[in-house]
Image (cartoon, rainbow, N blue to C red; front, side, top):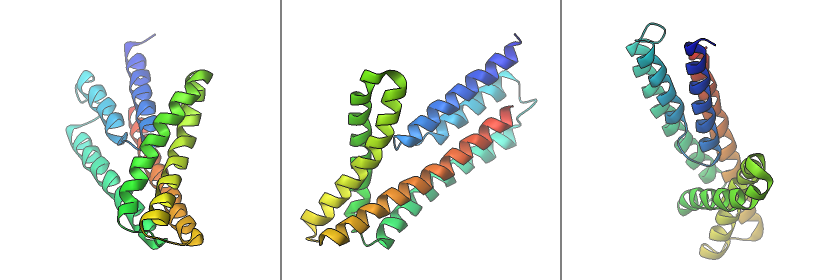
Length: 172
């Protein structure tokens, strides 16, 4: 097997790790970009130029910023308070860790799937409880705010995963 094919497989696996990080609420676009950087360095910039690297790095920054702005906008649009944005992130991270731990009894796939579900459930629960208890919102208002976090997280994930797919396509 050609060593460049092995390098491409390595970069793709790094990008998949970045995609998993995105699902857990972490900035995985930079992990995918790191794979692109490694590929360009090993390939001595013949397939990927320094300008493309710079552009994809700036693009990763913009994607992360857009994700956070979009999530914050949607949370506010659905009637949540400013603190709910932070609670959504904390709840999502905690839910992913708890879900991943529980799912680990089912191996890697179980850990990943239950971790994803935990991230969504944690975000939803944290915002619901924050809005209901801290801001004395009604049940319906808290549910609406919590749904805003889920919609924001889904849209942000889709944008980031699309970006990672494009980065992988540059290598192949």
